Image: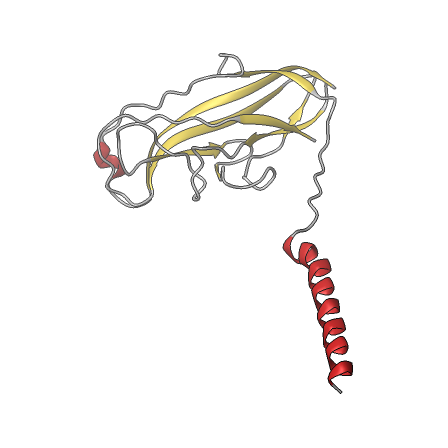
Length: 183
C-alpha cells in the first residue's frame, strides 16, 4: 500500500504545483489596452491675446472675504481664442489636464503663501459652470464651442475659493496645463 500511495501523492502534488504555477500569472496580472485618436485639427491658440502660454491675474482681495466655508471671490474672466483652424468648422472644448496642482475637489492647489485658499475655474460658454479639473475629458463641465470660419472663442474665469473657510493673507499662485479637444 505504501508503494501505491507515495507515487499517487507525488503525482497529485506535481499537478497542484503545475496548476498553481500556470494560474499564478493570470491571477497577478492582466491586459492593458490603450486607445487614442489623432485628429487633423490644428488651430492657432491664444489665451487673453498672450499666446498659448498665458497668465490670468486675480484681483487683490481681503482674506476676510474668504472666511466662511465655500466662500468665493475675485472671479476674473479670460478667453482662449482659436484662429486659422483647419478644418474651419467643427466643435472644440478645453480639456484641463490633471497635474501636480490638481486637487481631489477639482480645484487647483495654491503654491503661494496664503493658506486655506484654492483656485477654481469656471466655464462661461453657455452658462456659468464650475470646472472639475480632477475629472476626465468630457466630464469636467468644459462646454463645447463651435468653430466657425476657422475661429472660436472659449470663455472662462478663475476665482479664489476657501473650501473650509478661514483663508489667511499671502500670495496665491498655481498653474494648469490645458489642451484643445476637437470633436
